[in-house]
Image 1 (cartoon, rainbow, N blue to C red):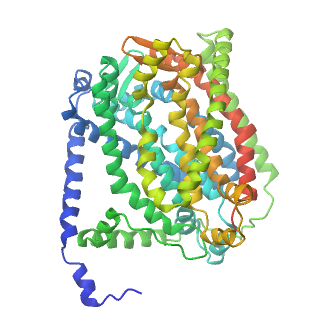
Image 2 (image 1 turned 60 degrees about the horizontal axis):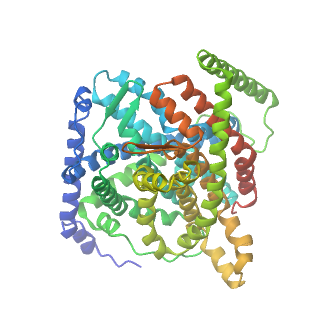
Image 3 (image 1 turned 90 degrees about the vertical axis):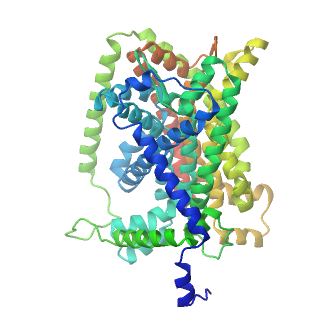
Length: 575
């Protein structure tokens, strides 16, 4: 029990030593934002096309600031997309029939595929201005963040315990109130971990998002990605080491300042019925709670948030809705017909666009290249599951290990495959190795972390009362894995495996084509096919490659991952 007297509470509002640190943080953030915005809004795009990227380490703080600003701008859009898109897919059965397959396709569309179609669009929104290039870069980073977060939120909404849903109905919460008082809190632990992973995913594709070459359109935005691109082109190993150090510093900073407090804060939303041991507070969380300035700001924001989430925003209902009523077959029939007609029209337009300049032999080539990439994806998924499921479970069940592993995992997940190209390419050339085999591990760098982070989130969210029951019954060994832990983390693992599968296809773009100075290695695969088509500015081949890749992903998801996800939702949901 807290023994706070009025005098003590008043004293806590007086400026203290924490306020000095808070003032420095706030002012530093404001100065950084002003510095980034000054070179973005009205600057002519010709200025960045003629700007030299300096490889001196003195420029790295500025480049890191620009890249990080793009990351967080994309993260804000990703959160907005997650709360709207995933909620609609989970709450509406008919909408989910369309939105989830679309999400499957979007996560499999390569970054270069988005670049091909969106660069001209964003540059056209702000003709001759850097803002268009910045938005194109932010959108590319958004595509590497949003799908994973949306799948995580969707998985949480579809595995809500029935007793919690019944409680929300008993309290007669409106959909708006239920969303903020049940849906978001229940999803928060997994969403925070997947948000960290999404930030790391943005770093993985930072080179492609800042050093853009699509046909005759090219621009280089100041940032760590463009710094790495220039270092790779000039074969400057020292500059690559500087970039790695800068990335490590940036990741450690936002881990300490943002994600570590968020993980600690999200722990209070874990679904359990027994008291859990509270882990030590991160220093940043202490700063926020003990600083008079942040306390005042927090009180205002909390009151405003509570007022907003308490609003009974709901459409007027003339009659009581029977949630157990069978859906209308007539409405379903109309909905299916609309989907079929829309899909047929889109397929006809795509076929017409591709067939204008390509032949059936090009389709055969794309399908064959897709088969090569599919084989790599299958092998890598088995490897990732075998390694990271036990490691992720152990980390998630041990809070001390989580605090140590969190920044390390973020850094490794953010490590761009491009930075491994020099040693990999040199080894393959020196020993005359087969690129089809030895470039494959580069795909694992960008995919294994989806499995690991989701398994950690699942193990960390495992209810404490169930842990106590398992300990009391002395369940151990293989029985513990089969009957306790695997069912407990299965929805999280499938979400991670599903996004890792799509991410592996996406990572093939940078993993199947590796270059170092004058040396360039190409493996057989759909990623190399799309990369070469993008560099040549062959839009029809890019479209063909993206369509074939999306087809492979949809088939795998429908045959394997979706049935497994439905099983996990039906059989392993708590409550």
